[in-house]
Length: 151
Image (tube, rainbow, N blue to C red; front, side):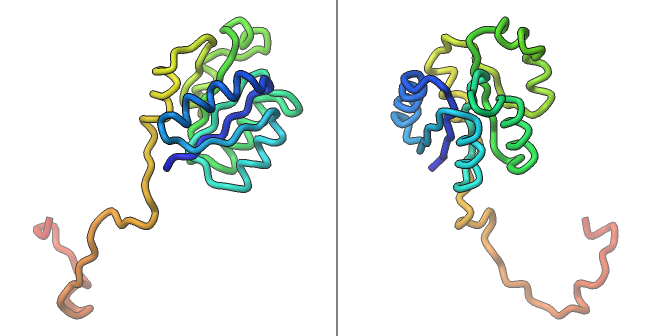
């Protein structure tokens, strides 16, 4: 099951997003500021983070840098009130995507758009092998050379 970390300073908005994600069988954790988001990301494995650009107690760009540096496998989706909110901080969508943000959602966004951000994520169960193991017959001397014709 996919785990999504939600970081939004507005509790009502965070709970509304959480309700949507829970309805699609995603596990969620809500934090109200950037510092708690970083702390929670270090406690448990997450496949995705929904990070509001107006996050308090730690700027969103600092949280993003922390996540990209320490957990590059996590998909980060930024939410913002408008493109103007981003521009006021000297940031645009192209820059966010360049530094590793999977997507940027401007409010109000459709439920289907939110779900698409997390449905497309890869979720591999580490307990399942990708291919079935096979025992190979032969000794080490049979496998010490490859010829181009072997391919």
